[in-house]
Image (tube, rainbow, N blue to C red; front, side):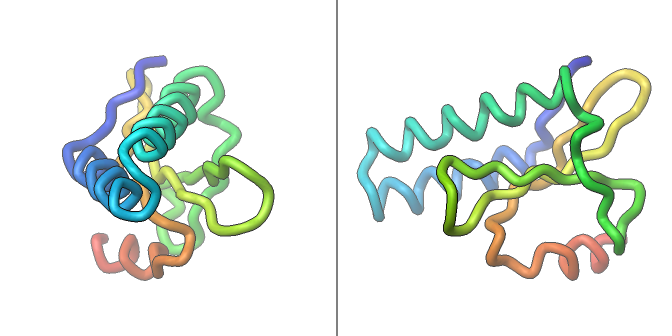
Amino acid sequence: MKVIVSPIARGELAEIWAWNVEDKGIRRADSYIDFLDKSISALGKNYQRGKKIGVRPDLRYIQIRRRTGGFAHLAVYSVDEEAVNVLHIFHGAQDWENKLAEEQ
């Protein structure tokens, strides 16, 4: 199935990259974004593995974690008959469920 990353999610990925450049350097930032992109692309084959979101049962999410421990990033998406639509990429420490509830 095709995976479509929304402009909002693309912007969030750009913010993640910029933060990582500041904190870890450009090579690590590029590597981490590549890792996130691959995990997001894999949703085309296994979108059903995502968990439903209580405040938004029309949406699902997956945790994307590079290593055990620490926070993960979350890809929030919807699925229709044609595509997996990635709507947001949140850091696990964000109050992402409330943000999604406010968007309804």
